[in-house]
Image (cartoon, rainbow, N blue to C red; front, side, top):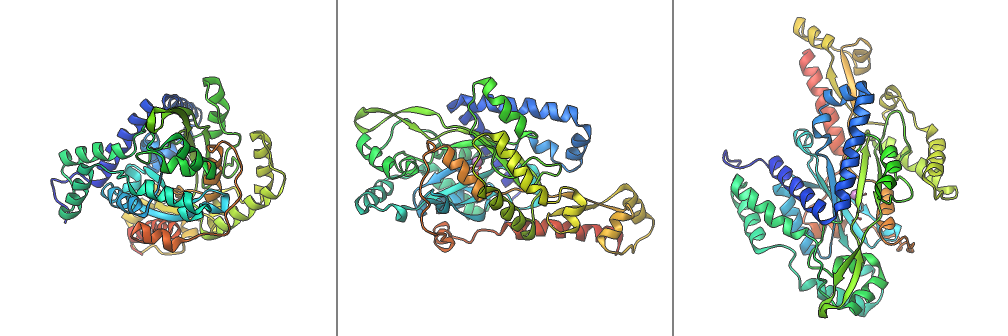
Amino acid sequence: MAHDSFLPADDIRTLFSESMSRMYQQEVPQYGTLMQLVAEVNDQVLAAEPALQQQLQETGELSRLSLERHGAIRVGTAAELNMLRRVFAIMGMHPVSYYDLSEAGVPVHSTAFRPIDEASLRRNPFRIFTSLLRLELIEDNALRAQAAEILARRDIFTAKARVLVAQAEARGGLTEEQARHFVAEVLETFRWHQHATVSKASYQALQDAHRLIADVVCFRGPHINHLTPRTLDIDRVQQQMPNLGINPKAVIEGPPRRRCPILLRQTSFTALEEPVRFAGEQAGTHTARFGEIEQRGMALTPKGRALYDELLNRSRQAPAQAENEAHQRQLSEVFTDFPDDEDSLRTQQLGYFRYCLTDAGRQQAAHEQGTTGDLETLIKAGLVKASPIIYEDFLPVSAAGIFQSNLGGKQHQAYAQNANQAAFEQALGCPVNDEFGLYAGLQDDSIRQVRQALGA
Ligand code: OOG
Ligand code: NI
């Protein structure tokens, strides 16, 4: 039962994403520099492309552009993941999609907590890519038992956070004052701790099994490992990073640059080596935290996604290109088989679109009700227009590339075919949402509204 005096979940999420961003800029100053670069490039792009500016304005994208970022964390136990689900639900963030990263040599599986309905996405689409360590993939029995035992000893949540979560669940929300406390307490979970909880020798043993295992197991909590602002020109930011002393990963992940951007393109700066203290005050370093940028395009239907996966695979058959320019050229060649105009993407049902009335459509609706006809006819008649629905999720191959570039570049053997969505959902405490269902829902809602307005 929603209560008048409760702060809306969307507002709690905004408080949280802003606090997280402030904390991370303090912890990792290079991230602040990256954010400035992204903001500058976005301003340049908008100034140079008035049509893009207008389109972003009309679709409500402009107001959320500078807000938009995602983050990522990695947890160690089912109980931690389960509690996180409850914490994020209070901020209107729900698990969407299952990602198996074991295939790419990373011993985790993941989901993304994010807002799912249209109004909330519009307000603030902040998402957290959340990975659960799969201890069962550690081969050495003794090491696996040791890791489990270390994890069992920690509680990554403050006592006050636990109380506030229980209260929010029991009463159906939090007052503004409670919400501010809640955000401050939850932030503690994601804070960086310079003190590792284990000896240098234990750290080294876990590090040798897999760098990611040491990162998850040896600290008091799941420090936020990157935040990611949204750029309108990822190629330009990638190019300019070195001028500011930022070292980008070698290649931009995802599809190539296109006239009609699809899905998600990402790049990051490589993780920093940071000083840590092990139990017994031994000094050392740990490399885990970085900054990332993303450029988002159209969400694809299952048919469009299958074509994307096929072309990406095809491009990966050719020898890997270490240089971004060569990599992008190779991708672009293969992706000439992916239609690159909105009409084709729509009529071939490769992408999801949001439909609305044009000015002429609104006049028609005011004049007389009962206009019918299929959508394409209405579009040709100038009564309806379609604009792409933005992709809000992640891509497993790209995510693996981001993980790998921040694990010291050492290639890991893929673990044997290992997806286990059922075990993940069991740990999470609920099924993950199906991303395609969510996009189809947004598209269908927009069609229903158009039909209703026309009085069909
Ligand atoms: C998550 C890497 C995946 C993305 O943007 O694809 C990711 C991690 O390194 O924990 O954040
Ligand atoms: Ni990321």
